[in-house]
Each structure stands twice: as structure tokens, then as C-alpha cells.
Image (tube, rainbow, N blue to C red; front, top):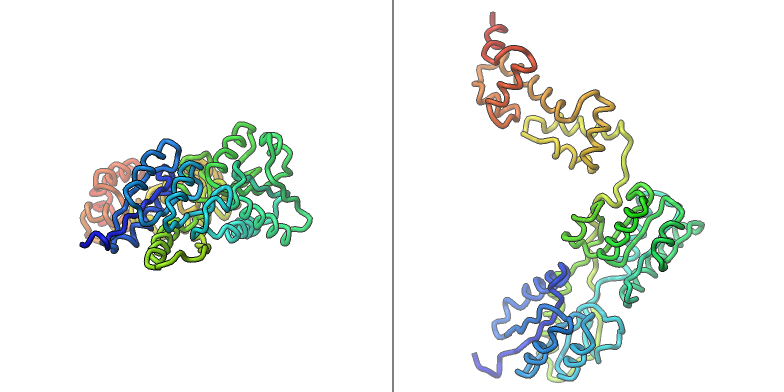
Length: 382
């Protein structure tokens, strides 16, 4: 490949977060087919990576893809290079870069989606928005869309913006309250504060974040519901737009490309608890349909979408025994039927009834009926 056809591209993203890694995945999805692109990757936009950025820029860079929220020194070094630049998400100050292409989330759509989601869960006594501490433009847009959308739906219900100290704000909220946080880490902080104040989530307060970062959302207490931005599409669009800029002979006009979000991942922080009778009907229906497929108690609980403790409590209160006992009872009843009406081997019966092994079935059968399976079959055929 001729040297003049090679394009050296600097990519500076924050790979410490899931969003940054998804940005990079989308970028590579596009550039894997660009054999003449040489990628110079900087894995963070913190101050400590400024020497790496400067070194790459000194080696002749043709274009840059950078995370908008980088430190000022990195931004200044990139701007001074005077090469085509694509910025993923706007920085704290929207005019921090001179004339780039911005690839942004649909922050207005994210705010409206949060309002619509809470509206689908019923009426709350109050609503609140917890903004990004740096008051970034994207955070302002999300909050404005959330508040205005709720105001249009619930004119008599207060919608407030979180203030410091956060503890006082949370305590003063009329309950039940629906809270929308600008991003997952912010929402995680709210959950921690609620736990310290013994504010029940989701009983007193429901909390929704943004980014669907599994490392955060799956390990908060309770697990955090979150809106899923399309970070992969942002990265892909950034590479595509840089390719477009590099193919032009003159600098293109600045523009902004907006990527819609993908939906909402619901977890425990926004789960409503159905009435006990409904839960038991759902559990019984699921067990009846799948008991012989080897399902476990955890499968039933996941189907109900509530905690294992609550699922077993509600089931035991209504039925008089646990979910595990119900699975065993149904499987043993089917085993008895097969022993009486077929010539299936004990191994085959264990398989048909969803038991892990013949030994497990034999032990349970004798414990419940006082006969071995062989003895039961012989007795019934007398």
C-alpha cells in the first residue's frame, strides 16, 4: 500500500466505562474494512494520557475521533492539530471544539422515554430528576425533556430537580416518587443514599438510570433499571463521518448526528409487585407448562420477576408449601402415572419427568410414597 494512501487516525475514548468500549466496538465495525486506516488508540481521555496524545499527533495524524468530555489539555492539543475531528457526545461546553462533527445520543428522546416509562407504571405522588454533577449539555437536555413531558401528563404532580444536600431532597419528596438520574453512576449514588435513609426501593421510590452499564446496574441494591443508548451506533457513525471528512478536499461544515436509544432494561429498582393471587397463578401456570423440562425454582422466580424470598413467601402463604415442593409433587405424580400406564424404564421416567438422575427420583419417590418404584409398579399390576 502506498504511504500516501494510508490514513493515520487517532481515537481517544474512555474505555474505563462500558459506553466507551461500545463506542470502540462500533468504530471497529466500520473500520475493519478500511485496510488503509492505521488506528492510534488512546484508552482514556484523562490528563495522564496527554503525553500519548501528543506523541501520536507528532507522527502525522489525518483525523481524530474523540470523546467530548476529555480534559482541556487533550482538547487543546487536538484542536491545535487542525485535522478533521469527530466528537462523540458534546463536552461540558458545547463550543469547546472548533467546527467538528458531533455524534450524540437522542438526549431529548431519552428524557421523554423516562417520563413515558414512569407514566406506564401508574400515578406517583412526585417525580424528580438527578442531573449530572458537571451540568453538561446532554444532562440539561435529558432533564428538560423529562420534566416537560411529565408536566404535560400530570399537571398537578410536582416535578423537581435534585438539590444539595441530596439527603434533604430525598427525605422531602412526597412518596411514592419516581426518580430519573442522568446516568447510571448517578442513579447508583441515589440508591446508596436511599438505603442509608431506609427509603424503600421500589416501595417508596423508583429509580431509573441511563447507559445500561451491566457492571453497575447488576450490582446495585436493588438492581438498577436503565435506558439503553445505542453506543455502538455512535461509534459506527463516528467512523463513517470521519471517513466522509477525510474524503473531502476541503473542511466540511460542522453538523450534529443524533442516535436514538434502544429501549429500557427493567430491573428491580422499578419493579411493581403484583398481588399475591396473580403471582401464584403465574407461578402455577409456568410450572404446569415446564415442570417436566427440568426447570428449577430460580426459573420460576425469574419468570415472576420478583425476589426469590418474596416469590416463596407469597406462594407458601397461598398454597401451603414451597415452589420447590410444588415442582417435586408434580414430577412425582407424573412418575407414578408412567409407572402404572407404561413400560418405560426408571431411567426414562426420570428423564421424562425432569429429574436430574434416576437416583434422585428413586430417593424422592420412596420418601413420599413409602415404596420403591419397582415395588409400586409391581403392586399396581397385581
